[in-house]
Amino acid sequence: MKFIHTADWHLGKLFYGEYLTEEQEWLLKNQFLPLIDEEKPDVILLAGDVYDRSVPPAEAVELFDEMISEITGKRKIPFIVISGNHDSAERLSFASRILRGTGLFLCGDLYHTLAPVILKDDDGEVAFAPLPYAEPGKVREALSTDVHTHEEAERALSDFLLRQMGHAARKIAIAHEFVAGGSASDSERPLSIGGTDLISADIFAPYNYTALGHLHGPQQAGGKENVRYSGSL
Figure (cartoon, rainbow, N blue to C red):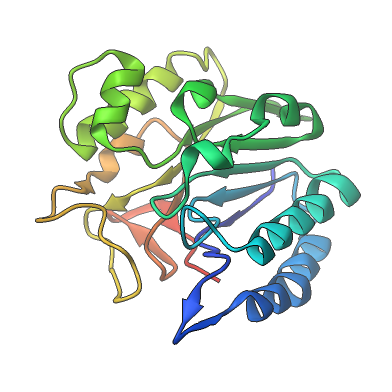
């Protein structure tokens, strides 16, 4: 199964008092959509930070709506989107259950996304584990489990989804986290204070590939070739 891994669009970003929405629109329409048409993927993964703030400007929402129409509407390509630390998980999940029937999987609020996304190709099932950004307290409440750190929370979410995947031969994780060993830049917002947001890449050992968001430079994570950040637009 061929997929495109992207992340950290940060639609509606402010830069010196000016929204970058026009520049982001140009990139998406003149580079990203042509890439989709050239590669013809079976699915597209967006690993968090769709927007730059929890309440984005109307123009940013309109741009994302247009991209959804281009991807799932015109091209009929499934689109799996998780929320990042800049997004409002609840807003991103609006109407998510009914939209799944159109091939759009909006995974933000944990209560609506605690299940894998199963897609099929000629070789059988591929199970995608959406792991949206969530504070440990939210994971503790959603799963009724005793977790206190980002690593414990991510491991608990992953294990919960893996148990539902059955015998799917191919498993893909989509996560928005800071994996230890990754190279950060000045443009990311810290997930927590004092390094407690760092998680181990070993959490993703059961997966054939892990599509990460949060760090804005494309790179491998934790020394694992199949655990990667796509980088931002």
